[in-house]
Amino acid sequence: MLGPVDKDLLDNAYATRELRGLAFDWVPVGIVVTEARVIREVNHRFCSMFGYAREELLDRLFVFLYPSDEEFQNILHRGDKDLGEGNLYWDERVMRRRDGELFWCRVRGQTFTPEEPLARAVWTFADLSEIRRYQPLSRREREVYSLLGEGKTSKEIARELDLSYRTVEVHRARLLKKFGVSNTAALFQSLGDIGGEHVVPSAG
Figure 1 (cartoon, rainbow, N blue to C red):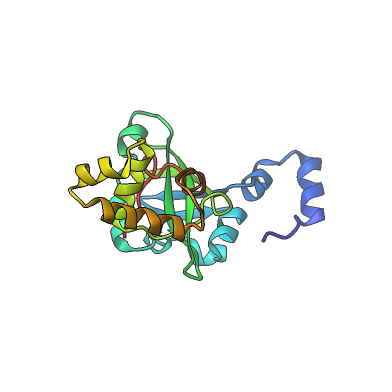
Figure 2 (cartoon, rainbow, N blue to C red):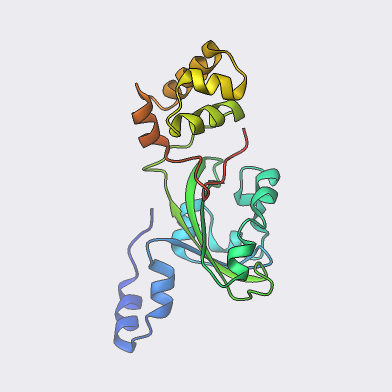
C-alpha cells in the first residue's frame, strides 16, 4: 500500500509546474525503464506492487521477478516483432512478488530503439489480482480449459485430445474446484481467456 504524497513536494510541483516527475512516481500503474532487460528506473507503484525498495530493483536483470528462469526465457523476445515495427506491445503474464506470491499482470511496452527492441524500453505493469486469481494449471488443464472456451463438449474434447470422456470430466471438475466455482461460465469469468494470443501461459 502506498502512503500519501509529501505535501510540500506536491505543493512545490504544482507551483513550479514541474509535474513530470510527480506523474511518473504516482501514476496508478507500475512503470519500469529497462536497458537490455536490466532495470534502470522504477516508480513507486512498481516498487509497491512487487514489494521491493527502489534500490533493491535498480541495475538488476528482470529475471528475479518471474516465477522461474524458464518463464523469463520463454517471454524474453515475445514482443520483438511488434516493438521493432514501432508498435506498442502488450500481454498478460504471471509475475512473482518479493514474498514469493505469484500474480497475474497486464504488461504494456514501448521501445526507444526499434532496431534493437529490448536495448532500451519502457514498460507498465497493472496488477490483475483482484480480477484474476492465480492458480497453477497443468498442461492438460490448460488444454481442456481452452477447448471448453471454444464451446466444445467433454466428448468432443476427449476425441481431440485422445482422452477418455471420464478423464476430461475429471480435469473439468478439478478446474471448477480450484477456482471455487460451480459451472463453466463462472470459471471463464474467474480465470479469463487464458487461450488468448496476448496471454502468456505459466509453466505447470
